[in-house]
Length: 197
View 1 (cartoon, one colour):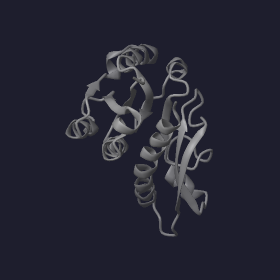
View 2: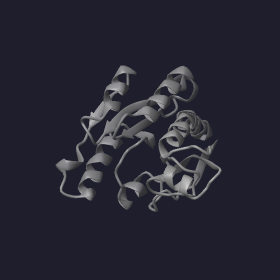
View 3: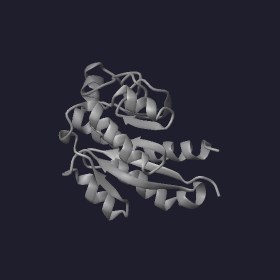
View 4: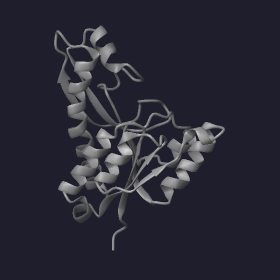
């Protein structure tokens, strides 16, 4: 019997990318196809709307409040223990608004992925949509990448491109990119699972 490929998703907010992955996993029957399932959705915020959304989709949820810990290292150590209880093949960051310590990133090296709302390596960090508009870019988009110790610099797994329109604001561009995120992230996770032995 092959080892089950458990996926743990970390969220801090609405969980829309998490929901896109859970729905795709169900629709495409990842359990039957790859032996893969979303084992848990974990949030650092008890009020994250994504927790209720995950529960409504049948996913198990857990909360680990970062405020309960004195240091980033202590929080990450507790988070690793929580994640590792699920024996994850893949840890997915889906709007998880925490800078992770090198120890955490190293622990999940090669099985930790994130989605970033720009065409990396352009516009790492925050305010990506406004920065793309200010720079006069004709195209923007999103990137799924492996997480490394350097913020938004890991190996790129997939990208989706959207046009920047003449009358775009950061909000209208963000909304157009988000539509692509909800398509790209599940596809990138699917492709990662498919590539595993």
